[in-house]
Length: 248
Image (cartoon, rainbow, N blue to C red; front, top):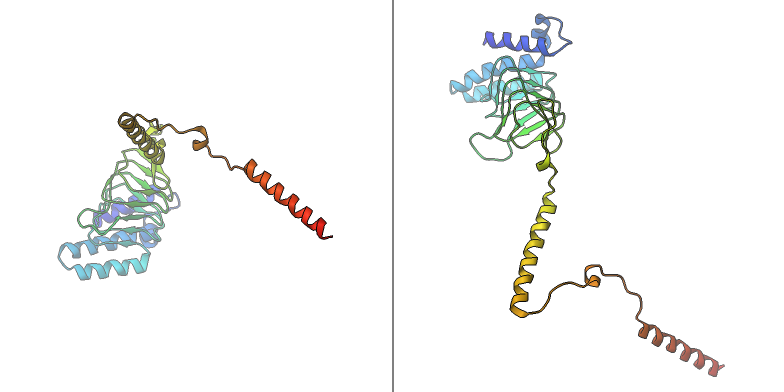
């Protein structure tokens, strides 16, 4: 436990330029406090004292604003910066060297049981407000942008941003983003058009009739009054005028 505490303090000093010394970190950093409480809660949980473990985690949440489920597996050397609003779920795994900023959620996407929270590999940076949801792996050295919502696996050394998150860099270089540019709605429309063409071809073979659309059917134009209707309307107006003249 004390070995992991030392690793946590070292991680805070390494990643936070505002940190002046280890004693100050130990006294004032809520992320270090939350992880220390979690070590104790996790020990109680593994000892089958689950209620006491949950009470400990909730007490730590009250003190630090960081909620970590007692069953979560967190290695030493993790740094939670600021920490307000951080939530780490039951089956989450966080490896050493990971940096987590305020407002981050390592959560699940439903009520399924088993592995439903993410595994965060070594040296990952998760920026403020990011949500990592699901039982997949975030690869070693990856970076998750602020406010991103990650719903699928992240390759090692990749940078992901957006909602939902997409890969924009791998090892500092732009990857082939062809798959990211595909419009699923356009793909669905193309598939429907293909089926319609095949059905029309089959009907033409059976009936011998053509089912090609005319230009007017494809691009309908709002038509004005028909000439006949306009002419009849004009004749009706002339008759009314003659009747009024006779009355006068």
